[in-house]
Length: 589
Image (cartoon, rainbow, N blue to C red; front, side):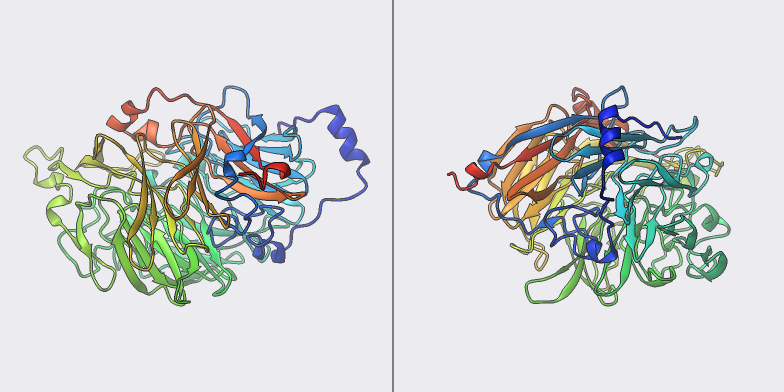
């Protein structure tokens, strides 16, 4: 139900307005990166480069960046704030914890309207009650809710246009990602991989919410097109034993990217379920029979019908919760080759060919990787079998397999927090964490709506002086050009600009601008709470603005083990900060 908050003055203003909202078209979405007066898409472009061509704000004048306004999400619903703001037609739109969405006046920072999803009892979010943003198309804004629904709201009024159920939240499904819009379709994934759900990509009609197609990410399940069965994903029982494919996990919880040049959606599929790989018959085989496709994979999909074009599995025989959901970024390298890049939870940075997803290279981007000795010429891991958690069936009491220390931890060398690519330097800027875990396997059976892990774990820092590490990575060589170390884990997004700047925030509350070539810290601002959100920038009337939301939370304080104790002093919050470079200071040194 709509919890609709609007002042009488704003109501009168909207009622008397003579012009309708400027409709957002497919062409507008395609040109989002180049159009510097607005931000219409998650990733500042559907390829997710998070790069702005703006250079008004640069290395020389960033010290003059100053707060313009701040907006509080208010109430007791603070928790983690992971949204990326959107900017359109004089308004900013953000989502908040507990499935809320706000429309804010871009000049003043005043609230225009608020939508509250009013969640039911019994939702089962894995990793905090967060939401990562919306998507704009036509006259609507679209976002998902923690009870696994997709909602379309009118941009000007916040009125509900349509509200559709994605899946059953009582079975463990939820939704947290920003939707992706291509050719009038709202394309979303699902969350809930720890509950034995089935990962799926869904395409809805943006106008009326009708379901157009579905594509499950686990072998053996049938896709649909216009209400009819289409094709099976993979082959039945080809890489899954028995009926385990029916509860195989592979949640598509981070959403996807879109490569317009190849007309391809790329979605990541999360961990297979359960975590205990021995139950999934991984065994000691290396012939693909225990790979559990298409979990822990990147999957290329035809946006017109949901058919799979290709897949690349980063962690076959997955047994450490190394989800394959991390974003895939389309870019062109320094020699003009069209590539994809993805920094996987398993600690390796992969480069793929954009035409067919073929493997190009993989290099470590965290310092300590124990589960694999490397990646072979075909892109397949060279497993360290001694580092796979032990089989409980071989234990004396059958209750707990051998404990191993694995690095990175199950929260990954990089988790959900988005990296950025600079067209200026040709480098990627990757937020990473240096941590490991004690992990063991346990017996488990599936029960609807219950956690389906079959593993236990304790996360530990790998180094005394830091956990978080922002790294500038040359994708051509895998070389780390510079590194910024942070005491607490990094959990927020990164943005780059043509002005030579890299922006990100820390759990300690600092919003920082770095020199993209050297990593020198050029400017910072204390926001008052941990930053796990995603920065954006845009230009209005010749002045450049930067926004980021502050509000500590997410998976780390919930799942972080010894690391959670290390950061338990950090304060929660919910404050959207917007900064401005005044015209009179743009040329000041």
